[in-house]
Length: 553
Image 1 (cartoon, rainbow, N blue to C red):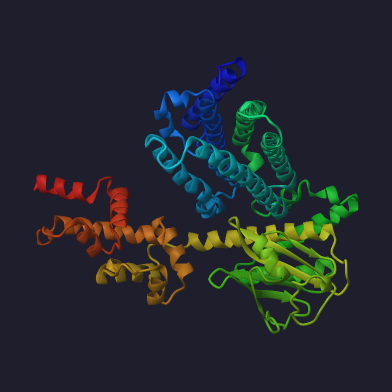
Image 2: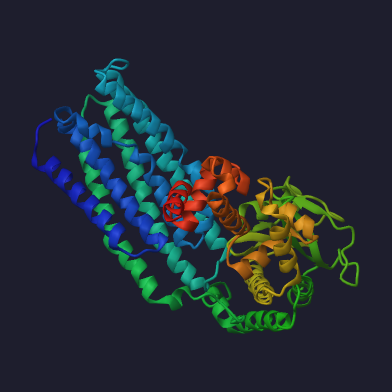
């Protein structure tokens, strides 16, 4: 391949863009949304830079460059998923899924390592032609397929975000999602163009990377616009925090702002405002979860002219939905549910709302094979998930004897009601945590058990075993430790184990013990866990700590 004005421009532009993105990653905003955006552009530019260097024969002249080649085309989609999750304020969900998203990158990292060894071994196992075939028929095809799958996944994230409304007024949600849709659309078009170039090379006599040049130019142009336009947009969100202001104190006007596009008449708008205001003020003096749920169920019947209403709470341990409050057919009086049932998350219409995080509006129940009959069959159903701290907490469900009873207005009303419910539950949660102090009896018993019996030295100690010993729930013990110590249960226990290890490292009776043996004595179950916890807490390794003590003594 010879140098020409086009490949020179692509080479230098991708190099400059990667340097710019790396600089912004180092010096730019420290929020995760900006980090993922900068990282995505950086590695995306490197993908093009790597290929153009091969195309120009640079790697043949300087084979050492191949050592730095990695399958960044499988990493870029993962970074874009992280950007999407961070942008819609659900970064914790990305943490839970990242190990699965990185599988393609890790597999091809192993393949690239083998290919590098093969090159430096003089093509001992694979010829140049065979390596080229792997790149064209295997590497590239799977890369574009992975990009397509991730595009669909990103769209699903966005769809869930729009359906659950989130912590923002509706018009802000629309603004955020519109911006994301524009980004998704561009990259979907580029992916389709990528497939088109592959097909063109297969169906014609064209060869080489020449047909890719317009595609690479389009990608680099998109990256540049994304860096300028995207970072400017993110900066505007940071400088205008009122756009991201979380609804608090049951500000009904803020909650329903922008939602009246589906309520045409002014009188209807007033009626909706009155209903939500009634819900909010009715919840004001409720001090327990049970009171909140029963109040919501009762008001749904009284104010929305429904036949029944059931609120489900998700049991995280069993992964099932449990009926906690009901009015109508399931109301047994005195806040009791007639024949309460449990529904596994993912089963039935209610379970489907829980699993997907998206409301389920079924116009004709009998046509839906997922329908689970509770007390008797009905005509239509609406199930809307309740979100708390970014996760599905439960489901608000209603059935009606008439088919096609529930409208889009019912959907938006239910979504707003679930948001009010989540706000109140969140306030109760914070209030309960705020009353936890060092004088708490359970906390004192917990500390006594740990220090007197040194139960933390048991490597099998868990939140469940500790709570069982104290005869309290694991959830309450976790809240207790978080509220008082400011750390999680594992961090709290590890801190005690590190302090114990320090004592043993300075104890003459343990002078002949190895470092690993000291860690096991303190309660750690592996060398890596011991070293990581010790270094994190003390800033030095156990070996360094012991050596410095011996020097001082």
